[in-house]
Length: 403
Image 1 (cartoon, rainbow, N blue to C red):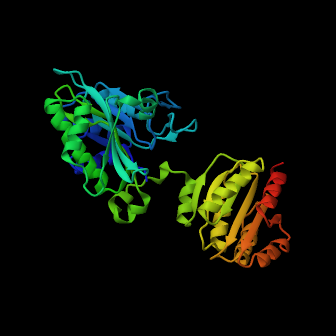
Image 2: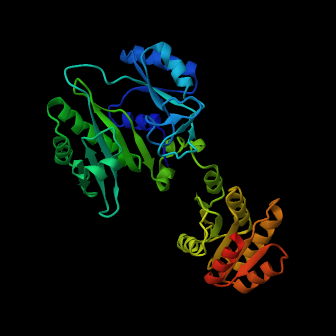
Image 3: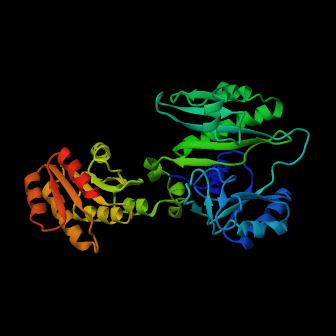
């Protein structure tokens, strides 16, 4: 589960990570009040207005309606409200959102931390994630903060610092110092970075996160170390014990079809193809997507109805798939192990009758328990549903259906 920057910073601060102070707002008036409060608390006279969406590249992104960037600087209290209103309610397009963009419902009004002083401010990158190849967490760091880490890794891989953490021992003091040293820090900045890394790792472990990415981590002109941005991803499987974080979920940032699927107990991921598929089991779903590709089509989704598919789940799956206007045909591929094929067949027939305006060609392949009975139900239904026995037959039916 992804969360917003302001939520991530709240978690970080709770675990002792120094952050760029900010207050979230949903209107221009609230933004002005937030700026006034920040002025009282921090003394800042410039304010950063940051769009809150689940996507990176906001600073370079553009709001379609106003051509405003997703992150802008207000150099006075009077600028805060109009600059916030130029972002709020608009559609922000970044390299991560795609051309459709994302609607901005909230902005974060943050203090200016790039103030003048004895030293030039310097940006770093710090990330923590699970390295599945080694079965351990890894701290990634770079002196190239503020840039996409993928670009740094591709163009200057020598600037990526990696430190693996033994899961039995946890983060050791020498490891935090090693990262800070390799970043070229010294004095108060060195001590601040060591503390920052310790606190960040503590937050990462305590929240069952799968990724913490702070980009940039800023060394201010007076050598303080703080998080200017924060991207956090929480392991969905651990949300049952992270109830406070689970409440942070913002479904307006998620694909509506995926939200609906989750409410129906279905595993659904939208893709860009023209053939919808409904399968029981992730492995069979992947094989089905391959079959669709081989037939000349493109899968429009990944949809796993699980091992206990029934009329209700099949109908829910149909409704979700048919909301995609690109879908020209639907392939249902069920292996009857726990689930009985005749039960799935009845679900298909009932769903076809219940969903108004459903006129797509549907190919149903049933194998396993009561497969023959299921095929008979499909064939005798009189509906625009075609039965297939083997995967090759299913592929041929799909090819015919999409032309």
